[in-house]
Length: 333
Image (cartoon, rainbow, N blue to C red; front, side, top):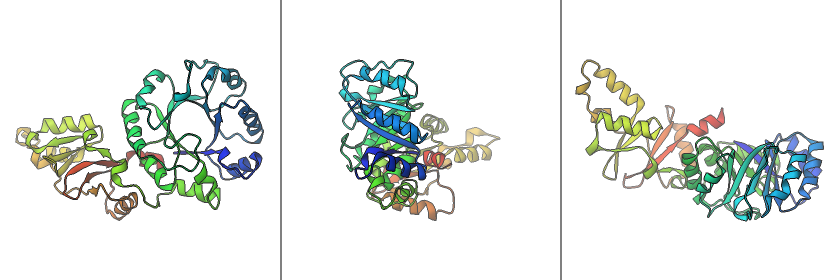
């Protein structure tokens, strides 16, 4: 996951010092907030003389068309317009280069992206826009999942309340880029903050249930409907390589691609003898929905075998959802 440094969050130093510091620490992107202020492009011109770090421009305006000529004259690598402020159609000319995105605040549903399917990404504002140092609203974990499901080929950027723990969760969820402002510049050094944002060691304030895939979005087969066909359909439709098995609300086990493969090998001579129940791993490693992100990490580290996914249960042993690590592993490569 790329870190986009919000350059105006440093109120104490001149721009040239801020950019120099970010250059020395090899930050991925420079996030430039433009609250309907055309003079921002003076800073963009100045930045271009200092470095070649990609610019991530976020424009909040009712009239985006007044920015088009400036964007043609001063190309940026990422350009985002704030959805809620628009008072005219957002019709960006093809002559404007760079990846294009639409930004939404927490109350706005990600389905508005239907009108911007030709754009490259969505920027999810997880705190109040323009309010530095806000706390990440956990509702946005659900919005990220929803957007990923609806638009699997598009990128997700996040701005607001990104600290070390939130950064770990976002990486796990497959977020492409996160904006960091007050966390980055209020740390003892930018280097320490960047290290924390990219570290696997995190302090915990969020619980697993805040960012898990909930049960209603997870592959599940009830024991009463268990058959080889129902198992294969659940694994195929879930696209995660496994399915949970429940008895009512209770988690009774898990069936993975590997479990199916082993079952087929045992019954190659007569597949009709293969029952769904013998495929079940009845003792899968699981995590409690009220465990913290730190507890989750410690569990993974102590495991003697690689963990790609975990069922999530409550204190009664009822299935509540799943946590997968596919996106996190991709992001760490």
